Length: 259
Ligand code: OAD
Image 1: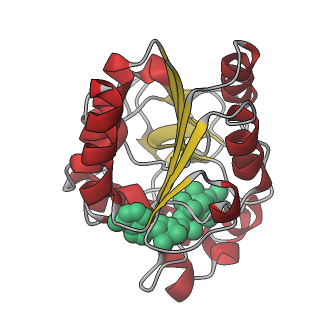
Image 2: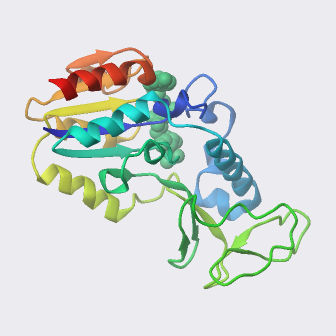
Image 3: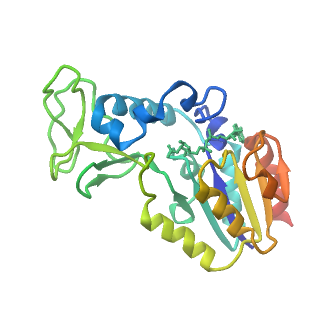
């Protein structure tokens, strides 16, 4: 059985992580142009870092939910499996899904990378948030905070290689998707159509998400959409499940695994 699963913020909603376009979603209250673009970072890196640090803290206190666990279970049972998630949190990995079976197409919020060179500091295991006092000891390979040059120049991590500003390892609006990850998605398609496609917790706002779901289910594969609300993909699904993912996915996946 060849499987493709695509997830969005809705799958982490039941873990207490806000979605983007839902009722209390981030983009309802915050302006993405001020927080999630390279221009915003150039204009006000403190504000951008403050927001990503708040999100990192919220994710650190969150636990994977039943939807994440069910998807990890399906990955163990399928002959060929790939999860493409738009989520930058690490809750899929936290549920035991191996990195080699997952593509984080919008990056990983716990990665910190240089805004100029290729230096990056990997994941939650990497360097913890710099303490709020500015006297962070400079250690080779660890992010260093420059001595504050201006009052609000707080805790802007700098690259130990080239001294440029470090930024969160996520994809911002107007930026290219990571080439290597795109290749991994294409490789999954090159190995043939999927028997099962599950799309859960996304408005499918981006064209590539719609394209991947349709290409994967092109040869009559079952296409299941799990979302309490209608989306741009609903018309193409062979089965619509208008329930929260944490409720629906364990049953759906148990049925698939036991069939
Ligand atoms: P959205 O906020 O656009 O959509 C969340 C979807 O999840 C909505 O369709 C909700 O109906 C649904 N939903 C909410 N709770 C759910 C639950 N418990 N179970 C199942 N579904 C639920 O989030 P995304 O589609 O992930 O990108 O947004 C895509 C991208 O836009 C994000 O990765 C981010 C954002 O801007 C970038 O910033 C590049």
